[in-house]
Amino acid sequence: MNQAEMDKLAAAPNSWHMISALPSIGLMCALLIVTTYELTFETIKKNKAEVLERAIFKVLPGSEMKTTFAVADGQVEKLVGEGKGQQKYYAGYDANGQLIGIALEAAGQGFQDVVRVLYGYSPEKKAIVGMQVLESKETPGLGDKIEKDDAFLNNFEALDVSLDSNGENLKNEVIYVKNGTKSNPWEIDGITGATISSKAIAAILQASASENVPVLNKNLEKLKN
Image (cartoon, rainbow, N blue to C red; front, side):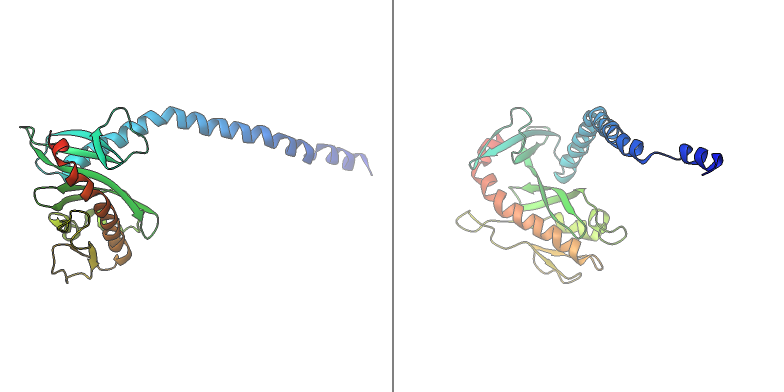
């Protein structure tokens, strides 16, 4: 081997040095991720709270004030602290303190990923009176119409979720129907080309309403006061 070849070999990267450097690089990347998360956590949390606040008043038309309640063993009490992991009810009131309705968060599997929604329930009308998508990754131009299609959103101006005579179950199941075929107030007129996303919203509201509307009605006096 001549001198030129020896010099070239000496200048070549040492694989051991490269491998030994990987843990340090991984640690640095991990620290950067954690630091970024810590620095942005409060801002993200604040932004989500503001979005939720606006959505509450949107799905409960006429409300100007709210009180947050938590549910435990079928009983509703005013929320103290953040109440992590608890089902929350956002009661909306008019300027005179009269109960307008209750907003609830719900979630379920959509076409692409989990869809999170907020909907408003009116005890007086026994109906869902508003719905807004909080989080969705549905297909742009198709599935995301559940967020902005006016005809679809009109389904939730008075979606019947009245209870049976025992007050334990919904009188009628909230169901999806093909676009243009809605004939009952508990049906959701779907979106052409976004069948799976439309069905997902129907399933989410059916599951949440059947679980929560009986609890809301049993605790109505607490919510009013």
